[in-house]
Image (tube, one colour):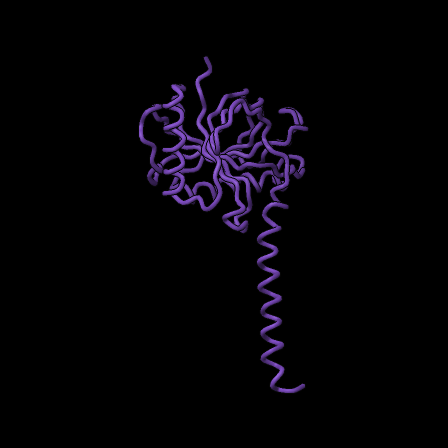
Length: 217
């Protein structure tokens, strides 16, 4: 082989590898996120803001202390361990979206909302596939994983793409709370963060949401 052609071949090979990685990131995120999602009905839409009625759902949840990112990573690991077979029947349970995270601390409706400091307790939830009843789901082997049924609820939601840094979540939560206050809606719950995509999804393709439970009239 001509030694002059080697650098050219190497450049082409590197280009093909980089292109493959980019395509995997672009296509992999949406494809991997094409799973069953929590059921809801949209009652009102204004841009990225929505009012939703959520159907009752069954969730697997854990409580984890620490800062937000550490808590969701640990929570994801514990629940993924359960749905991948660490349960009484060694049965795999299909993945769903979104992964849900919520601080245990409640906030008043008009209070400015900031990222909770390290040391707080966080709840991390996976919604279970709708084909399962509470009785049919396998029981977790890990006592930290709890299976529970959540009644139907109403939520105000703001949807966004991109990264989910502390600053970005705080900004979107404040935007959501301004809409809640403007519409004179009532809530006393802490914000809920919902993440729909795998971590390797390119930021502009990600679907993230901040949600707040509304007090039903």
